[in-house]
Amino acid sequence: MSQTDLNNRVHTQFTSTISQEVNGEVQILGKPLLKLAQSQSFARITFGLLLGQEIKSNKTEALIDLILKLLVDHGPYQSGAVNTIITARAGKDLVSSLTAGLLTIGPKFGGAVNNAAKLWFEGVNNRSNPGEIVENFAKTKRYLPGIGHRQYRLEMPDPRVQLLKRKGLVLSKHSYLDFALKIESITLAKKPNLILNIDGTMAAVLLDVLTIEEKLDLDQISTLIKSEFFNSLFVLSRSVGLVAHYLDQKRLNEPLFRLEPGQVFTDSQHS
Image (cartoon, rainbow, N blue to C red; front, side, top):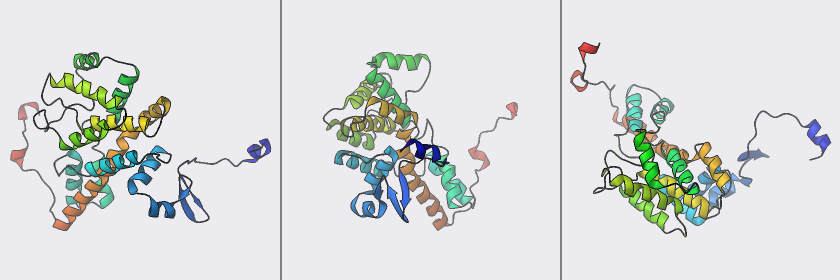
């Protein structure tokens, strides 16, 4: 572009590098959506959009497809499903009910993937001592992201985690998963429920895939971590489950939810 063109360029309100419309046809990452929709999987198109570039490896595509399926729902017990169900039963619409569920995603429910990725990324590339990391978190009474579960423990591990571990260990290199497993070996010696959970496993395997299969450099991965990229797959996949819970409640025509007095402990001395 010449200097004259730059001087005459109309100021735009937004910049987008992932999609556009050309002659009435939508393009995704520079290619016609109609063509992609007929030749590529949902996982490949989705991850390319999230990543901002076409993915290179079939191994990456297979992993993303697996993750999206593994995270789609985990029953009506978690905060996201509970909030969605309560909101649906209050007579609210689909989007309001979905949003109510999504707003519970955070460090304790589904939103620890990115923090775990940051911990594994810095640990590997700073050549940190896993034992020192565990002790530093313990001293400051902080939870290690990606470690621990209320239901699963050493003698009853999360089957989703076991499957993801196996997928990660067949990669030609798996430095981040190895580091996460070293952390787990230390925490398990303290308590049997301080196990590598789905968030931590997913973060480690994604880091390895992005490094080995997609050839991203450290700066690119650091940028992804800063933008919460590693939480995006959970949000995307679990949205399907939350919508399903909303539709289930409407189909069952469930009434307004209300707790019975005996289900809430009240202490009048502190009222």
